[in-house]
Structures are given as C-alpha cells and as structure tokens.
Length: 151
Image (cartoon, rainbow, N blue to C red; front, top):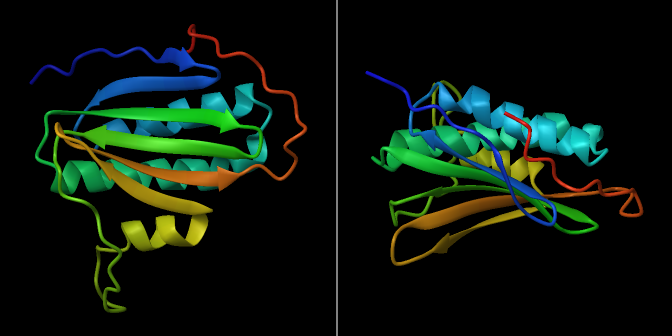
C-alpha cells in the first residue's frame, strides 16, 4: 500500500491544515502539525494538551469513520482560543463514553472533554468536523503569521 505524501498548508490568518490518510500512523503527523503551529504562535504551553487532543480526534476518525482520508487543521480564530479540527466524510458524531475501569479502549472523547475548553461536532452534507478548543492564558501574546514551509 502506498501512503500519499502530504504537505501542511497555511489556510488563513493564522491556521494550518493537512490532509492525511485515515490510518493510525497519521496521528504522528497530526501531532507534529499541531506542535509546529503552537510553537510558531508562541504557545508552547499548549502543546501537551493539543497533541493529546489531536491524537484522540485522529484515532476516533480512524476507528469510526471508514473514510480513506481526513483533514486535520489547527487555527487561531481569536486571540484567546486555538481550535483543533479533524474532518472526515462520515456523518456519525462521536460520543463521550464511560468505559469500565478494565476496558482497553473508549476513553478518547472523555479525554478530549477533560482537556479541551470546549468541543463539538459540526455535521455537514458531506461529513463532519469534530473540533476542540484550548484557551490561551495570555491572549496578548504575539501571533506570528503562518508559514506554509512547515512540512
């Protein structure tokens, strides 16, 4: 099986986005994208929460969407929030489950719910966007313009 090569792209002011294969290995690339964007914006203190959230969103898309690709994006639409989004062609919305203590899976959305300021799903005709937001503690920090050279 051939994995398509991807390149992160600046998609707005400021935002980054990348289309990835809907497979487990894409979680690593998604974490790198989120980490690079947060570092570029001077928000290194959000990297742990951001990479955890994107890992769980990607895992959820891989396990439940049945789609060949997904779109991962990170944006800073306001000074006090960062939004991490995974989009796929499935219209099935994720749910927060409360698995038993010995269950080996099923905690992804529970982790997102615990670490994100807020999260939700936007269902579209073609699929959905599942997003989670992190709060920026010091919204007066400088926001560097996106650099499309991150790969």
